[in-house]
Amino acid sequence: MSTKILISGASIAGPALAHWLGRYGFEVTVVELAPALRDGGQDVDFRGRTHLTVLERMGVLDELRALGTGGSPMTFVDADGRRLLHLPAEFAGGDVEVPRGELAQLLHRHSGSRAEYVFGDSIAALEETPGGVRVTFRHAAPREFDLVIGADGLHSNVRRLAFGPEERYVRHLGYYAATWQLPNDLGLPVGSVGLNVPGRLMSVGASHRDPSRAGAFCLFASPELRYDRHDPAQQKALVRAAFAGLGWRVPELLESLDAAPEPYFDSISRADVPSWSNGRIALIGDAACGATIGGMGTGTAVVAAYVLAGELARARGDHRTAFERYERLLRDYARGCQKGGDRTGPFLAPRTKTGLRLRNAVLNRRWALDKMLELGKEVSSVELPDYGVELAGTVGSVG
Ligand SMILES: Cc1cc2nc3c(=O)[nH]c(=O)nc-3n(C[C@H](O)[C@H](O)[C@H](O)COP(=O)(O)OP(=O)(O)OC[C@H]3O[C@@H](n4cnc5c(N)ncnc54)[C@H](O)[C@@H]3O)c2cc1C
Image (cartoon, rainbow, N blue to C red; front, side, top):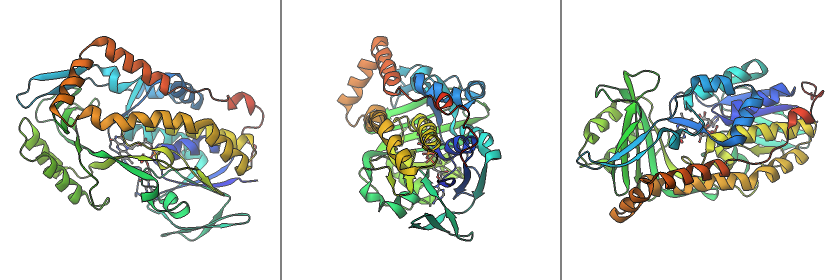
């Protein structure tokens, strides 16, 4: 029976999985590369009945609602500041929207008493043995686990070690995105305003929590770029180059990017992994089926944590049965959600003037917006087992 489980990554999928596994009595360790829980990133949203049901079953929905931003309206303008399109708060905000860092903290808080968290370390090697997985860490002494789960994001370390190189699984979708924090010296209101020209969007809005702070977001069309993912200076230079020569507030926003200590920068990419498990090692969240932005990655990660832990508990740690059912229940669902990510770049920054005009003409109509919102809720919904009912009496006794 598999009871000792190592999770790599403490952002959203990792702590959500640790929460459930700990509740079912598994012995859980989470290893995170960063020296502490990572803050930052945009606000992330949950939408539709499946996301809300899972959050309710976790016992975090009320807390999340209390943390909720209420969503952020988005306004797109041209170089002269003329309004091109306005999207209401619920468009990006879904049913509950929270700052990504606050969600990570909440999930960490809820799982912390039932899991061991190790920060500032990373898995260096994985060796599957007949009875488990021998794990070598960069810093800590080697340890044996029954199972290892990669919850370490789009550029997953576990996937690289156990499934093969990233190029095999991650497909660049033609855009890059960045977010960063800045002082709200411009007196901006909550909700974002963004300059939109073909292939580029640069936006900014006041923070929901602290009106003296603001969050900037940009997105630009580009073929795949070579850069060091751990070097913010290189990433800042790429954003600068992409937005050079643009007016509106772009020059001052680029200056604020130079001063930002920890911007988030990534390509808009999709992870397609033909099988989410390999022996005793499995993937969850962006590592398995990420789509960077617009693919409901956060909601899918939380749903997947519920299912993977539920199936492991139901199979009493028989990982073959559990991994197989986990993937069967969620693969099509996750693919459906990911498709939203395929469209994010072309939607936020169409590459041509005609594309931009067409998008604005359609979405300035309320019925078209409502249709898109309805579709989002449908896509994010799936029938799930009620593990609480199925496992009644066994919770806490798996080990
Ligand atoms: C700091 C940050 C900011 C983000 N900002 C945005 C944003 O603005 N917009 C957006 O759409 N999405 C953003 N995301 C991604 C978003 O959180 C995910 O798409 C989604 O929530 C699914 O989460 P995940 O837990 O699967 O992956 P992620 O949230 O990507 O988390 C992966 C975790 O694994 C850790 N990790 C990476 N490598 C290793 C390793 N070798 N060993 C151990 N741990 C490792 C990372 O530090 C991170 O904590 C951000 C993620 C992070 C970490």
